[in-house]
Amino acid sequence: MYKKFYKLSSQERRTILQDNGRYDFDLDVPLPESTSENMIENNITLYELPMGVVTGFLMNDKEYVIPMVTEEPSVIAAANNAARIFASNGGLKAKVISRLMRGEIAFSSPLYDYGEYIDNHYDELIDLCNRSYPSIVNRGGGVQSIKHRLIHNENKPSFFIIDVTIDTQEAMGANMINTILEALQAHLQEIYNHEPLMAILSNLADECLVEATIEINPETLRFPESIAQRLEEAYQLASVDPYRAATHNKGIMNGIDAVVIASGNDWRAVEAGAHAYASRSGSYQPLTTWSIADNGNILGSITIPMAIGTVGGTVKLHPKAALAKKIMDYSDAKELMSLIAGIGLAQNFAALYALTTDGIQKGHMRMHARSLAMNAGANENEIQEVVRRLIKDKPMTLQKAELILKEIRR
Ligand code: NDP
Image (cartoon, rainbow, N blue to C red):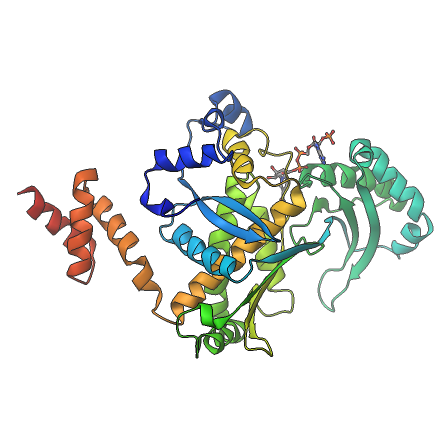
């Protein structure tokens, strides 16, 4: 259905998507100024980024098209390559481990054991929280737990912290969490006669977790005799070398951010959650694992916090987020969480597969040459020739692209 999709023009791609019920011209419109003006402060204009798609993305036996918003060449090509390989191995399996958000209220220098009051009035406090945001309770969510902890380190300031976990249903929930926390903190301030330091959601959303896995037969890859071991070693390297782990995770976020942005969600929240989760053991770790199964197959997995919503924020305000929903055809936040995690795993596989075989530059060469040609000022009719000559006569540099362009124009 999407064969040789990459060879088509943008217009032809849109037509194919529309024929498959995954595109709507009415949604492919810029954000109206009347919306952007109310979205941020001091708004002056819009800043565009390209949106592309990954086709044939098989997850939990359903085939998806995934929109990705990115300025980086090769990201979408790499994700498509991984999607094709994953699909030929039966596709990804993904599941949401839990979908709860957390907020915290912090008191500095606690004067006595504040925890006792919470334990003794637990149900009342849950009720107080839920009464402060009744609509989320009516939607089937609301506060799930109120816990407390004392952070006390010798020669350092102490803090009493109250953790509130909330089922925010289809919303990411930042604003509803903050509203609930404010109600609770006002009550506790009166009880403790102590002003809290702050009350805010936590972006370390480790109870809003999603997992995606893939099993790959090495025979479906190049270098089948060595690739499984090389992928496992690539993971092991990232688990002992933070310099590599940072780049390993950046590659994962290449995919994740691109879909989070397309969906209209807060990618800084997802980024913060991902990196904090990667550091939870005290050392910065890769967000994916790669190992070899007893049958010799390659096992890849990702577990990552994914604080996204399908309502609220800009999700419903931005026409392109509505277009992204049409393209992905997800039904709820759990499905969207799974798709985003799956793309992260696919992106990571594509990077490791390239790095442990041909090296990353080979795949990037053509896109890099295009970028150099455009930066040198080549127009649409000149780009192809500049790219051809750049690839033929390495190394590829901007200076070389400018020289080639001069020659062509002579
Ligand atoms: P909203 O404040 O927009 O709240 C969600 C809205 O969705 C509510 O108005 C709710 O309605 C409505 N809604 C409709 N259907 C549902 C449903 N099925 N389940 C749940 N809600 C539903 O957004 P969030 O609270 O999700 O906050 C997200 C925004 O907060 C993002 O833009 C983010 O950038 C920002 N933010 C992030 C922070 C961080 O990450 N640290 C901090 C502060 C803000 P109703 O009113 O009837 O309940």
